[in-house]
Length: 234
Image (tube, rainbow, N blue to C red; front, side, top):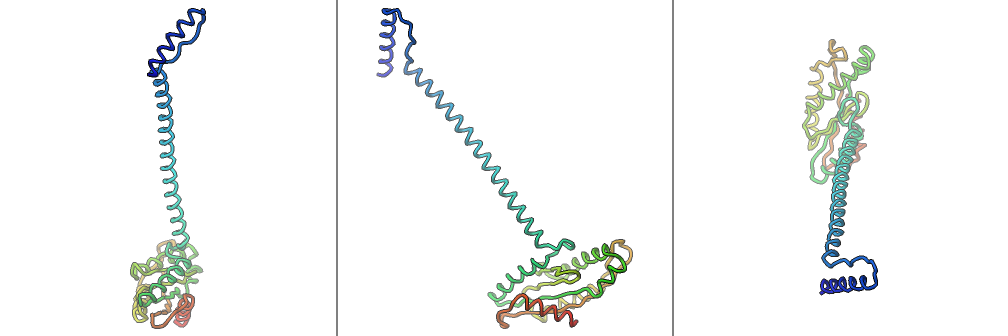
């Protein structure tokens, strides 16, 4: 009906224009209007699709950046828990680890032991061979400790030539066995300084402290100090 009306208007406009000698534009047909509307709608749809593609690309980029940030933060966290020289756990990581394990041990009724290890007369290596040789020996020593404990245990450089080993689900008798095994291994191993020619022979003093659920609550600091004092007695 609308199309028919447009045609009649078009015809009458033509007649009147001729009568009054006027020049006027012809009215747009319904089909033409629909075509123009479809073109405009198509343009809107194309623009919407473009914006959606850009939005998806931005979303993927944001997802990628978020993952990169997560990995960077994880790497930073891991690096902050490592000893810069030896690559093993540092004191901060040890304290976090023991805090969690003491709670877990109390919950499940499992014992926990700590070894405090000091390299005897380590200063003499630095004095005789230099600090680079001392650093090389410390790296090898840390590797020796890790090779003599279980994968779930934690080896930490506590500071200087002092190291701490946290032994999970280990009683005092079991910890003494591990400590003796480490002591014998270190004593029988050759360590090489920076020049890799002259072997260094090491001995260690080890203090043992253990905690069991029947002992009641214990503070992390007290457990480490007990092992430290035992090491000095050794």
